[in-house]
Length: 384
Figure (cartoon, one colour):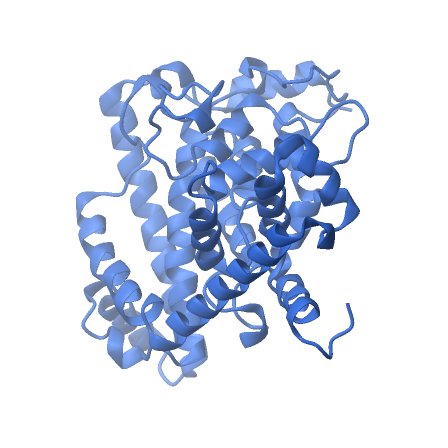
């Protein structure tokens, strides 16, 4: 059986000098004895997978509200796709795969129901009371809201995974939410990998879901150079295949092409910057895990297309506005009379204040649960 020393020795022999190794971890807020045959980051990964917040991602949505169809991505399927892409990139760059996977699996734990619409609604409602941000909320989930252990609140993750959650897709500037997490430093390369993997995953699966929904059509994509080139290559190689198979192959090729470009460009960055350790990487005040200039040019029209033709589609806008209305009305009805909240949430009011307790409660809801609560509170014929 591999023991802790052997696990750390393997990391030392196989990982790149600039990778974050478990032996160099800053540890946990509440010290714990190390597991006999799992590294610190493997243990974090497992705690995240077994958390309530992780399971709830199954019924939290990306673009399409849960009841619109069961073939669209949810936060859970998105998270799994991000973890897969991130692991591939980390492996190619000889980074710490376990740390990368743990951050990837945790990166959306703080997201609300109804995608970004829910986050926007809660941020507006909490604007004068600390605001709401899904990264901050993710850290709050793992540090405080998860209740699994008798010896400490939260799930007591390592410093590096917590940093990865807090600094996910941010400018890494000094802010109160990064207190104790070195706000002046750039994140680990493993965190940067997750950021880019997140972009690759949601760009491509939103494109796939948009096509599946009929909100965008393939002919709308013919003006995009990157789509046009991949479509031509797949069509020439596999003549006569169904449109569904062709679309799948194009999306797969699109992901592969971006990941390959990212790995190749990042290797150039690492050599140019002469990185010798993870400390060197954290001193660089700009992203090291990057696409090439050519890939950025190819990706930009695709991302603009998704913004204009999918995210601003009238049906998506309707879903978003309706979702925000659900969140706003739920928040206000709980705020007016907190005794409508479950007893467990009422107990938190004493520690956190009524607004933050209500915010935490709503942020933890799935789409389905939020809709059920709405019906119970506003439909006179629904049982409470």
